[in-house]
Length: 53
Image (tube, rainbow, N blue to C red; front, side, top):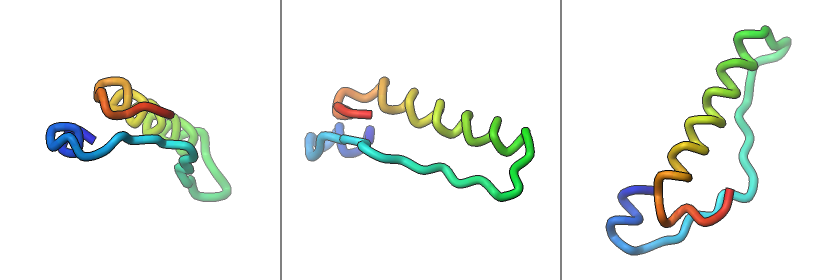
């Protein structure tokens, strides 16, 4: 997102997102999944070109 924003090329709209976890899932798998969602949200909030999440 940062690279595209620096080039002035694109608005980012994340309308759907799946973070897969193995099944049967363990508690640690859900924690890792939540961390990935959190990290993507942080990136989106930090970039001006991320308009929708």
